[in-house]
Length: 387
Image (tube, rainbow, N blue to C red; front, side, top):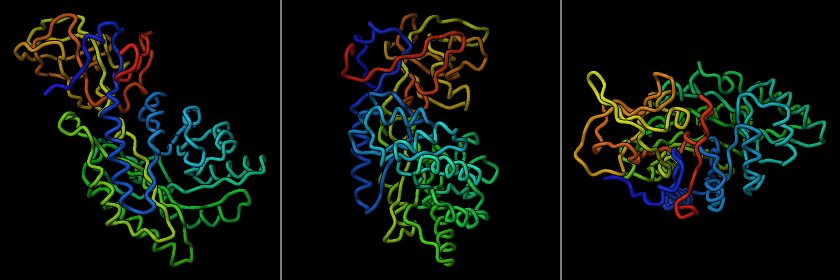
């Protein structure tokens, strides 16, 4: 079954562009609220790196989520659309001085600190301002995830986080610093995770590390387990809202949360992935030696995931009900990797047809580039002018 798109309204817009179905987004946010509220002290932040379209951010903020930022620019975007500073957390393996100062000026909730040198810089900059920075240490739990190798983050070989064996030492150092308030631990094991067993493994590791700390009389109030929940790229209509019930229940069941602790999540893809589609027009249908190509006006500059990760996105010809034919769906960029999908069955394609590349609400518009001097795609929400 194809998605529902206002094709007549699309005709007035320059392609390619991103189209966000706000009904899907609001249903997703309602499900997150409902499922997280079943458990005490569960706090959800939205990972802005997935999609920073300001209109999308405004809807997420209106629904009560906090903001997870990985750059100064994302902090500025969060503040601009009204996320309260006390609900903003700042992660990232390489925080620049100006970004740390920005976060200090806004008195954000927490820095997720990834190294001892970073801790020292935050303490120094906070001292200059006469402020105390709340920090959590990001610990690399050496827990694998069943996902693409490029989006795992919790293995010992990854650049993220502090080694488990260094955890107690960095906590001791933090506690000697006048301008640092150590409040907890942060973890993240990867993205596009659909196997709840991966999250169970993280829970077990967090439990182990907490027991170790408590044996040394170290109690913490804040646990952040990151995000990572995936979406169904194969069936965006059948499963437009991820299984948040199973996700939150996994943590409620397996993580031994103390009565004085809050548990924080940083969901990105799962919030916005299914609400967005990249809309493109067909430029040409080209017959090759042994295949035919549907050449679009969208390319890897607009949606890089297929070129970068060989990622799958469902592709639909939303202009045609003709019999199916098989195409390689490609873009106009002068790179052989500018391919959205090979051997894709589509209703017969004609020049000018609208093609929808689904499940593109996360890591789509936000990762677009101007390579080949191409214009960045615009983003439109359903129901807004000119839609």
